[in-house]
Image 1 (spheres, rainbow over the protein chains, first blue to last red):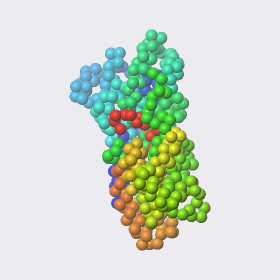
Image 2 (cartoon, helix red, strand yellow):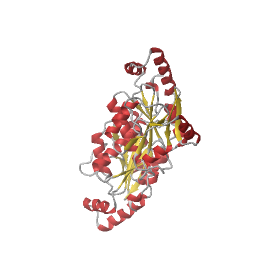
Image 3 (tube, chains in turn blue, cyan):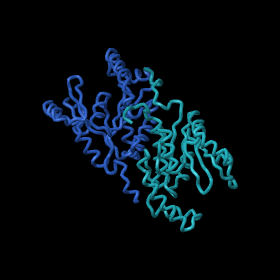
Image 4 (cartoon, rainbow over the protein chains, first blue to last red):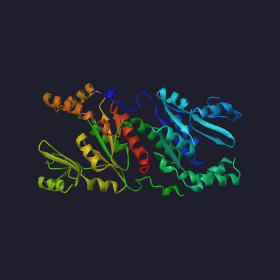
Length: 204
Length: 204
């Protein structure tokens, strides 16, 4: 038996990773570091109906599309997940993800708990990773350090974070985001390990 | 919610890893390297009825016990797996593994396919890793390099290796043991990733 013929279920096709955290959980910073460190990994670019902010690049930060086109994509079931936030729509299209994994790269989605649960229902092979905040004090410090939140907003965010933590068990992995480099190492290990995982195993 | 209260199912208790390969698959070398590189990992010492060879240390290489005591342990169901090889018995006792994991260390078993299947039945939480030989030529070269096999023996071993490869799908992970350092990195990643895995997830 030629070992190269052993199909572990993802030969040639990339995997789909979903990374979530509570607000202020340091998800975006971690993903940037992760992308620097790992090859064969690509961040999936979301569609949005909001206008580009100064410096944002079409196709790199977002795929900026008009509201009617977004609505049509929703009605055609083209999104793995989507949400409306403050009157603007954001979504991850299945074809964006498929174009990444189809080239043998692993796709990574930077999405919140609600989005992750939608992806999980549509793509049972998605691998979900939750970044745990080191504790409420640290999380509050991070939110304050952003400086973009007024106090009432921050309280809303902290309450949302508490709600989001209830979803940890729905994720395959949880990584404590205490020290950034340790968390990056842990997520890198998860990605490397999943690349070795036998998808056909009866005991998953 | 205090994130330290989130129980990912192995808090405080170590995990059980089983590493197998075909004969000549380079398993023992890899495990030695792995032990050098990773902390909180301990190789489980097997019981055997055979006599110590020169240089072998009781409790380190094996736990050497008389045949009647081994038989009693078998009848009492104290082994997670055991086998008779060339008239001598070898086994992994459950209490040896539990004493490792109970101290918060991850236990690692260096056992063959038959043993791994026994462990899997008794400990459904065991994590099984199969080292894939880089190919039959390389495997044959490794077997020949050992120099302890006569040619007829080697053919028997090669045929056994082919049989063993049929069990790959019963393992959770398969790692190509082409370049040793890459294989060590891959198995280290698997161990790190499993330490982050949510055991209670409904989607395992």
